[in-house]
Image (cartoon, rainbow, N blue to C red; front, side, top):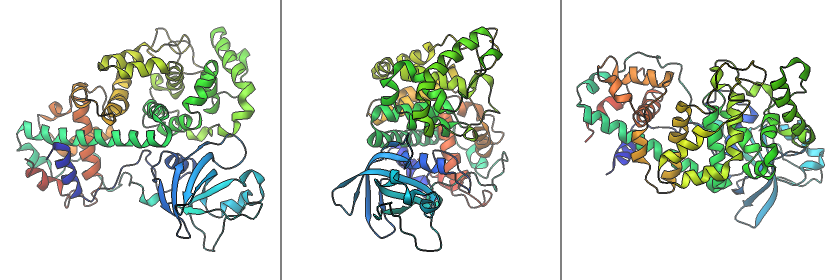
Length: 455
């Protein structure tokens, strides 16, 4: 039995639930649920509210016009012929009525009404032509759980003592198996996304999520979903303006307020955005979607958005680099991305920096390689693990530090177990699978006993 298979067996003892793409609390915004739906996190095959068998053949595209959320979708109901039309996703079933969809002809081609909350009275979704639309209720509670408030942030766990007594090679083998398991899961996710939206679109969405990091993963993913690569590449000179406009960062500027260099750049963006603004207005993200505070200036989402635009613009060159066996080709692609404005600015309105800055820094490149490029190679049955183990760890975060404290406490070998990205990923997998799933404050967690049986 391989390491990942042994880890999966160990994991099964803890009754693990899947982790989410976006960490959601007990209340769910419509945008978050729509993004999860479009990413396929709810699945592709369902049972409708009337017992119908529903298979989503094509999730469609984010709709730019008035009407349902997703257009050009295709579903198969009760194994009959494919129905093509639109999909509407609401929080509650009654929103169809309260939002005026029932009398709006723009919704007449809807083939599926998806919602998460069902009202107390029976409700049938009907169009303005009185055609009944198939209803599907999805359950956000079935999505993976989030952080438990019962978990201490950095107190050593019960597994610290037995781990301290294990030889270093045994601990490393456990971390490696958990990391390989995590790599396989990421590859499976990319494979599923590619099956839903095509390989290029799946890669763009994952690159976007990696640029958004944890604070802005959702808005970056939404942008890649709403402005797919095919749309962006059709107008290569307007990629940057389209992304900044749909992101909501191009309100009508008073250009007189800015320095000449900034004024010139904003004028170019605005002149490209203005003719398309009406067409794309429905796709613009609400300002509240973004988290602009709490990030380092170098990581401001506007700089990251410029990097996403550069990736889309240079897509053929990126794909060629991904086809190389040498991982250095992909690393060089991201390191060489540059922009005459963003190499010297933190935000659209900031003063120029005194020195040139990388558009995508080394730590972010490493994260992109670990979370997108190597999982993509794994999904293609190309060798990924050897390169994965060689990636040096360049970042840490609260979850990693908490997980290290829980598992290793003050073990003097602790730092040696976190030197590579693979080791960090293995620790995160264990922390998420056991520490975050346990609400007994470590007392009933099966990991300490099970890992002693690790062969």
